[in-house]
Image (cartoon, rainbow, N blue to C red; front, side, top):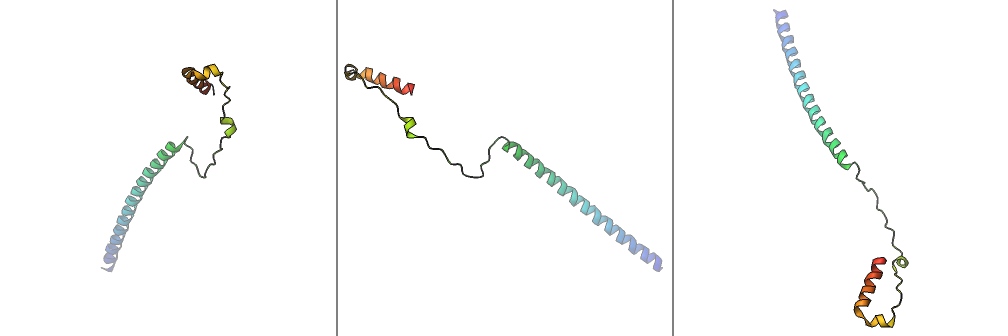
Length: 98
């Protein structure tokens, strides 16, 4: 009688352990699926960042020397200075060349 009782008890323990293992394996499978999704998202984000420069520190801008921006304009002949349209055309032409 005691043998049957211990046998039934050990079978119940074995069944409980099998159920626990099955539950753990389901949890592991869910975690693996979640991990796989996260890996895919990270990979997609890395692909989006590829080719884009990510700045980690401030970049100083080089200032432009004012001497480079000066335009040498030849003085106008007094006759042309009186002619306003010729003067405006002259200014446009010199600005286009610069």
